[in-house]
Image (cartoon, rainbow, N blue to C red; front, side, top):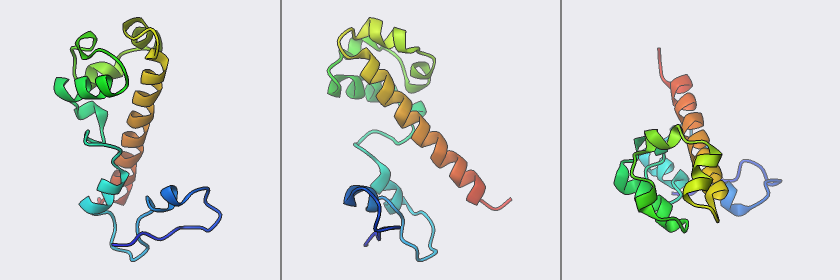
Length: 116
């Protein structure tokens, strides 16, 4: 499968590879896999404790300071992240919010594309 660039003026080839093909076939599981950053589910709200632990550990935090699932992470403020991971809590919060925004945008897109 080949992805094509939507525009030659895009800043990087990596972004181009995330644009779905223009063959009218829509998004498939294979296309969605191209959007996935790692082995964690795309939607952090669906993460269980194990996924939260892996995500925190990969970003330099201690998983035992986050004994919760992804829905509980949604309730945490930037300050709450910083209190649990003083040296990188703000970056951890930012990464979580970015992933959440991406999942919400995809959900909205799917809802708009689905037949009524």
